[in-house]
Length: 403
Image (cartoon, rainbow, N blue to C red; front, side, top):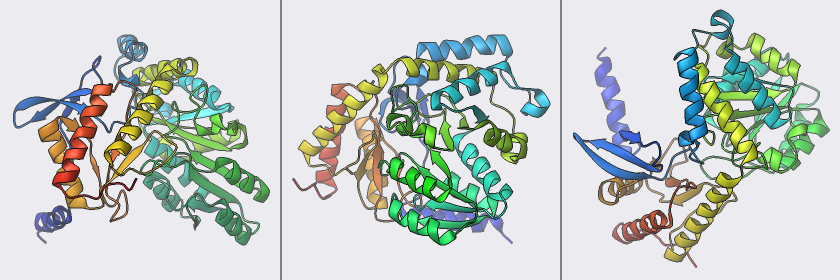
């Protein structure tokens, strides 16, 4: 069989549909976020990044950078292997203690990414709890879906953010062990789940509650513990999962919960046991970032101000964007080819980088530009972005928002 021909035919179809992904060759500038160098055709071009998940610019915070540099000089660059073979570096212990404190839990466990922490935790719980059934919000992240699939446990989908539907389906499951998996902030639409109602339903049915706070940690709550901390509900949630790769400006994922729960996943999860540990320098930097955002709300408040200003300017220009209560601004296009084209024009003609979001990340017909304003975007940056979008809306004959 001509495998390359097969691969090429599938890629050609993807391109024809407008869903082929092109990765920008960017080099972020420490000390000058959100600016970056765009490497293209042998030349460098200055661009402003509008779609980073380094939501608060902590990837360039001096405390975080210095902590990483000092740990590299002290410990070297790598962890030396898996934690059960290479040993647990003390920086891992310090970070897990900081994470447990962040969420008011007894213990925490590090993973190499937020994807892996979801995959490993849900996969282990579903596989190892006899007779378990996992009830999953229909819009859960791919990492949660893959973890549930890997567990081979029975799965029940409940309507997105519909706690009444969850209640009905939990009742239908009966006396089997139940795990309810959902997110706090959904990354593509930016909507926030009704956590209190979901938790009350879980408690009424004796279900284990599992929340993904990856797009909320660092961003919400007085110490950055996420929406569950902001709503004073963290103590009622069995397992809180998060990431170090977004608001904390580093890389890695984690879970927090009771000591037995965390030790159970540590002891039985292949995704933890057989994976090389995070470098100590990453752990040190993440610890510094978490500590800083526990004490400082300056970054969160500045980011919220930028979001509000950009939304107001988009409204004034008639640019349609999805309403939500989070920091994520989806600007709706509704066509994959136009979405890709607008992204390319913004980059090439306006020096603005915002990646198109197409199927399968979002359903067909809901293609969008996912914009994430940060505390370091200036008023001039916002004005430039809105001017560019307004110009392209006219050129591409896209519908304006109805006043």
